[in-house]
Length: 138
Image (tube, rainbow, N blue to C red; front, top):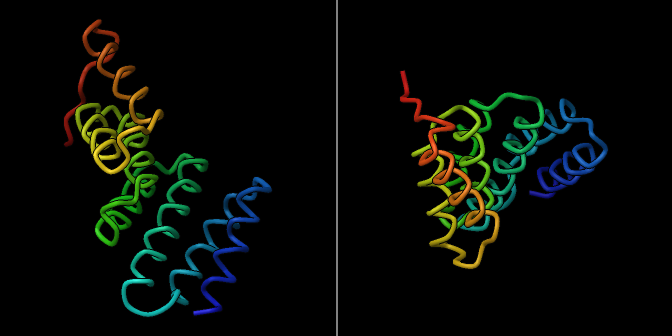
């Protein structure tokens, strides 16, 4: 609904101003308020979750960010930003093979995505040269 969209816009304004705690709270309130009916709401929720994930990344909360991206992708499997952000979280957490899979998924949705291509080559060359090694989930 309108309340949810207004809260989302306020969250984005707070994010742009660097007020990440406030932005995360506003995005959470927006999700609680909802953004419309049916399929529209699914895509809207995926976008808000992806935005909140970026906010969590800025706060260093990578696990929460990764979870929001996964929730976003369950709602909208074509959300490229959610794949890119989840890939970034997984890379930062040392889950490189999972990160590469996310960047490859982003490319399936958007074949010309430069960020995804750059991350795949960066991770693959670092792995080949032995600078980084895969971390497995506990």
